[in-house]
Image (cartoon, rainbow over all chains, first blue to last red; front, side):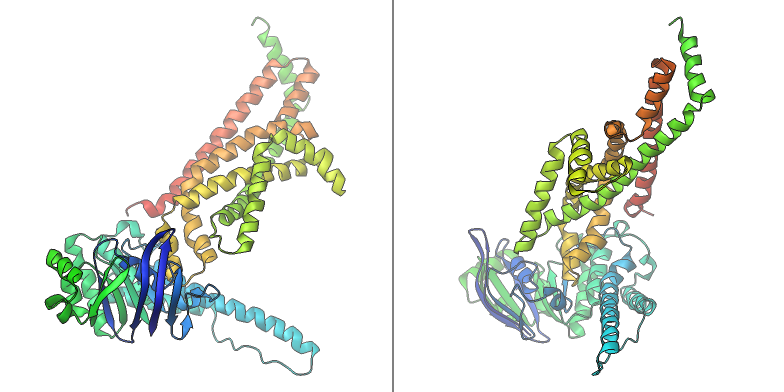
Length: 274
Length: 236
């Protein structure tokens, strides 16, 4: 599904990622672990080009999205991303946070189609070979109603439907992160990228977020998680990548990595955190 | 101050009995018109410039636009507004052959002038919004421009509202130079009263008082607006 080929990322002279090559298949749950500054967050952010790679290619569904001439926005719609700092839109209510992107994208498509139809109609009145006009079977109101219904369904799923019309500043960290996750789900992504989703939460709120992620795991969502929760990585991951100094030093199934690490650096790291 | 009564009486005669107040009202109207429409133009220009300046510059077009914007800001911040008025009214517009009423020229110049200042205010406001907001929008597949307009700018405007209020107040006061090109503002009205009654003390005092009142009302309006916009910050 995602092929990462010779991925490199530099900040000025600092090499953060050095030649990373790996493949993420449909349905895999990948946990990325490693010490701070090992480039794991940068690697994740390169997967949907939040950071532009300096070199190499990222093939997502057959398209190299690292190429600057590719319209990245279209491909990002299929990759949900969840941040450490939640990043809910502060000026929008919870339900608007969830509705904003699906609604904007669909009504934008509608506007473009209407505009194209307008020009085709003008053209058709002057020429003989008529061009077919685009079929429009929706309206702005319908798009809005659908987006709202979908958002309410997602909020019900996480039990926060009573918070639909409040602003994010009134919510707890765990609630914010769960809303951030369903906001990403509202786009029906094919893969979810989690960037340390529980690192800035109070300990008692970590559970509720991990439970939601586990639900997604059980539904078969493909996901990549950067995490410091080793127990969680062990439980849900189908493959664990250990990164240090911008390289993947070891990748294997969690049982192997956690009980029988081969690389010396992995052993050292795991002995500290476990 | 023995003859203050007499001065007051003279002023009143000119102001009320001889219909000086109609001139004052027109002057006040023009002052507010120039300041408010000027600021509106300034906000539009300023927002566009600010977006150009914070836009990532990988490609050539944003780079060219950026240097154009910097030239513009440098020009309008580098010269006094009086000079801009005079140059526009007596040099630029005649050269390109446009005939415009003085009042509209003033609105135009004050708009362009405040655009340069608002662009810097707006840029500060945009940069004060957490970068995560933009990242979240982009990660959801929205384009840079859409995220900017729907998420970042509304938050930026909330942050810069007090400073924008400052700009409006400064504009109201700066309009007192429009008489250089023959537009009628508050100063022109009171100067007229003073000249015709041979007595300047009371008219200028009243003028100062009116400016203070206008500015206080604007400050009050901005406070109210700010409170409304802060709705999303409050716990409810």
